Length: 170
Image (cartoon, rainbow, N blue to C red):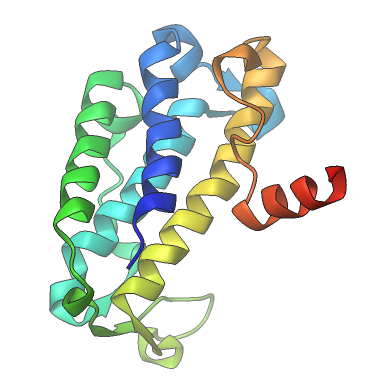
């Protein structure tokens, strides 16, 4: 499995954590329905952590993620969490792909009604794509706060969109 795209996404949020002022990180943004950049960061990193921690169980359920409030308020803890994910990804080998059942609960349904066959690597890619989506929301908050200079133009832009844009320029 190619972990380089994951490293790009994770490095982007780690770099932002290193640059952003603590107050801007925890500021409740009206444009994001009162959510903070820290809350969106926590959401990104907890999907990764949930995937990494649950995959050996052969079942994954993102509804069971920890929701650690410290990750949305403490930049140092956030950087440590990103580094943990980096370390885990660096140790992955192709043989580490395993079959999983992804479970979730939707309104008025039982968990078993939403059991979906998947694989660990597929879920890792989901975490990355989901992270890029939340980066785009973080970008909106950065623009709103007047600090978008902390990120590069492709922050929160899907790799396929970046490729398409590059083709259009050529």
